[in-house]
Image 1: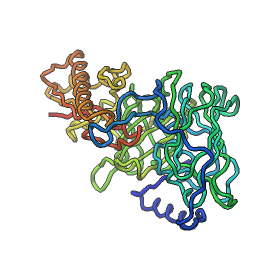
Image 2: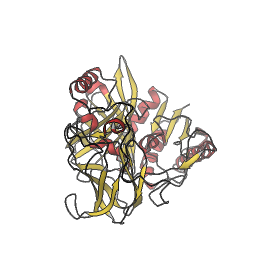
Image 3: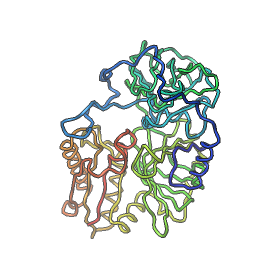
Image 4: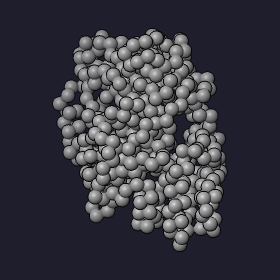
Length: 457
């Protein structure tokens, strides 16, 4: 199954999307001068209390002096959450997955004429205790039509996606307002979240129900490793999607347009950059993440063209065809082969399989297999000298990010030195958040920007 959102770089898809929007009727709009209805209850103002599920660093918002508390939604795709029961959906470009993509401008919409209660069940990667929930609906048509979701019940279960649900919140949303926050009425730990969207703000039965975003904050109570992503998947546009995971490093390929992926595993997502043949060259096309449910039967991916996570987004759902990785004629192979090829061909390699503790230069143990491979390459290429670059996301101040990136690069050099590499062959550099490869507006983009790069001197 394939979900497509605002795909701009594929002309045939763009044509289909335009056709759908032209021939499918939209919400009947009021005159722009008419007032929107008044919600029963507004969202709570201010920030939720700090919990273990939130990052403690500040997020840069334009100047070093202007910072705000950075929060991580535990029901987002970037946290490893995914939808197991979907409601009515107008079309693939307005599926329920839009609620979890951290983009307040995308939306879920029911089919025209469907205004009855809708149920959405979200599976979480860990047993979780939610304390605050939030909704966005500013970018629906509700300001003029009443399509925006109004009354919503939120429940948690630790039993299954079907049973054992207990209510943790009952809220009413205002129209056309983002970041409507509510404390939960009961703290119930669980692995599944059920939303029941009961109605919209309109009395027109020919209308739709629309909602932009659902977020939730609290504490993850368990910490289990992500299933190995290695295997072959059936993402429609790829013609066979082959992934090889070595430690936390990801490489892979797909048949269409001589596609390649390079990335790593962090938390409950695989994050990677994707490349395709354009003319006579293989070019970097954008970034993506991949979530694998515990049963390993399918994968959910979010793909972007370029850096902007507000545009060109695709949500893809594909079954896992086989645990056999397979291959492509244009793919160099695993970690060592890919790094050698990148360094020889481009003089630079982006490495995502090197992870650190949050806001720290302390290496995570999961990173050591990737570092050992790099040491092995340098031993096999005794004439090579490299520069190790540290890159961060934009969380915190520029100076803090600069210092952190320098320390992380130095930590990598220290590890490689302990593995037998002469320190005279290695220089280090830190760039903070000055060279992003994805948008820093979402946790998915920030995950792409936290990386180490190697440059052959």
